Amino acid sequence: MHKLYGRDLITIQDWSLSEIEETLEVAKEMKRVRYTNQYKDALKNKTFFMMFYNPSVRTRQSFETAATELGGHAQFLEPKTMRLREKGKAGETIEDAAKVMSRYGVGIGIRILEDAIEKYGDGDFILREYAKYADIPIVSMAHDKCHPCQALADMMGMLEHLRDVKRKKLVMMWGYSTMVRSWSSVHANLLISSMFGMDIKLVYPEGYDLDADIMNMVKDNSKKSNSSFEIISGNLNDLKKSLEGADVVYSRNWMSPKRYDWGKDKEIEMANQHKDWILSKELMKLTNDAYFIHPMPVDRGNEVEDEVASSKNSIIYDIAENRLHVQKAVMALTMGNL
Image (tube, rainbow, N blue to C red; front, side):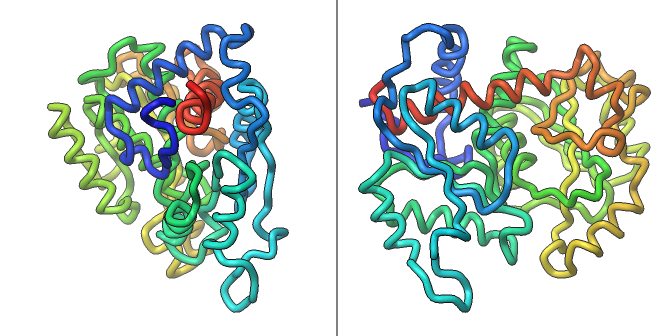
């Protein structure tokens, strides 16, 4: 068994840089030999449970495909149909559910964020409760604090196109949308990019601060990798200045820290004050012919212009494909027979 066998993947920070690099190497090889039989038995006759508190597009598709290509099966579960205990309702506890599922499958993926939780941190708590009681790996398929598989796919894509990301400039910018998105993918990308030594500028309008604890982790990662991390809460002029010389631009909407206090309608009202925060073709001219990345789904016409999202420098489809390969690597290493 591999040294990662049995390990949880709840946030990308839970794994060391060397463990992440090894996982990406396995994913790269799996991508190269995808249509051979090299890894067809890595999860032979094994079941991976997928618990979706929230809907998804690529997450379900990529995990099911990953399990199939490894010779296993991914079972789709909706917690609302599982008679689990909820606030004010009787039902099965996490302890009982986790212990029983451990008798049936080899891993449990959980997706819980945004409208599926009452306050920030609830999703992370639920994943860690499952990890506490399960005898099999718990994998975050996106929760309120992190989306580790997206982080792996992002880094795989950037390495494919930049070759070396050390000291390359990444601009993470807030993009306008009324979708009120979680911090999950943004946190994950900042964590992994800082671990790999990218110089990061995080730029957003006033009022869109991210999780302070996660930001401290990013700062620590940057110190360890001898790179830089700057947070800029400002205006469009600050954004333009930050974009100068960028190698990668990530334009993504995210919620304010008050989202669960004042509700979604207030969030949309707040976002509507910043409709000009859109990554345009003109803004991209300020960069070093930068690549555009995004976890998808892209809110075209709001977060980013079509001309940018569909340009030759957009690598969003490469990254989306890489979700399949990194998840195959994670599953094979933590649950399979590699």
